[in-house]
Image 1 (cartoon, rainbow, N blue to C red):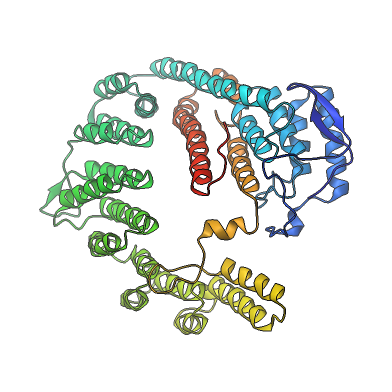
Image 2 (cartoon, rainbow, N blue to C red; image 1 turned 180 degrees about the horizontal axis):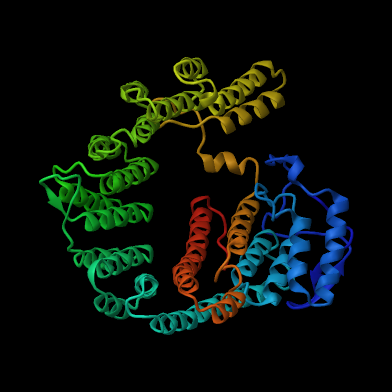
Length: 531
């Protein structure tokens, strides 16, 4: 962990002061265990940290919060694309980034992310309670501002010519945003005011928005308004293409939320809508993705027989793709491998025919080879690689070498300590198929061998705050977004703004989901759950 001689920290929630050294207390903060960092090159050097901290402190003193954010992020390294670990970032820096975002105004979401990252490492900080009280205020500020922006968008859109394309497209987006926040009546009013395919597009947006918000029953009810019947590829069979696609997306989101029985019923309904149709890949592909997510979730929940029974349905759905029937065969290979059905996985991979200009066979074989390597079966992995282009197999060869190096280290280990370390590294490099090859701990357990739970949670909140901060639009800086919109009332600006509304609501919901996931993980591991 980098220690900064002169670091900026708070005396009260909204004041900067100097701290002689960065310290953490309580909550399993930073452990003394060896670290596995993504790249040592990505960690800012101590002299860089010191200089950026000084510049950040000077910027904060003159209340240039944008500059303070920039300098503190450079000191922490969180603005680097591949810097993802918090274990070498002084907690004081996380607080400073959060506070600078807070004071800047309009950057409430990044502020919340970094505040939570700080609290994860220093739960007993002097002003922890003040920060906890500030976070819901910031979230409510964002939500209220988005509601105001939504009203502004709608008024601005109505100023355009009734026949303008951008007006109609923007109304479709606004209908989805209203549905996302539960204003179904308002969303339906907008949809019913539109004509032709725009009305159906609006209903589709409503369905997807309700599903994203977790209202699956409402989403499926709204899907009943999708009534357009289409013919594809001059087929004599007609079907409700848009409804099939919408329901497939709903099924996928149901599965992600853990409602597996409902998801299965919904995706089966999609296949029934398709009937004997071999379509252009869209609806059938969405159905296949729904099955893929359901199968993965079933395996996670150790419902192996049910997962296995869905593979033929997944294969049927992907076979319906007239344009590219082998598109999802690599996922079928992956499902078999996770179930320990290695021979079946091999049969599926090699059943994909070679076709000039298509990489479907290569993709399936790479998935097979990677699975072999991850199971420790490096000889079999190399044999599969012999059947594909050398350059295409580079990533898998790197994986093979990692596993073989870990195996060599274990063989060469002499002391009990060396063997324990080598075994840990081997487990870190291997994955666990579900069938007869149970030779690895869960990913969660392996990760906890390298990081404390506090560090993992802090990393997750850094990602939440950082991703929110680098995206333009409402989520990144809502005040600036509003100012830009007021100055630029073009059709393009309005359309972009309406799309950003739903994104902003999704970010707020992602906050709740991450908080719930962390609480559930602590309960699962028998750890205290914070307030």
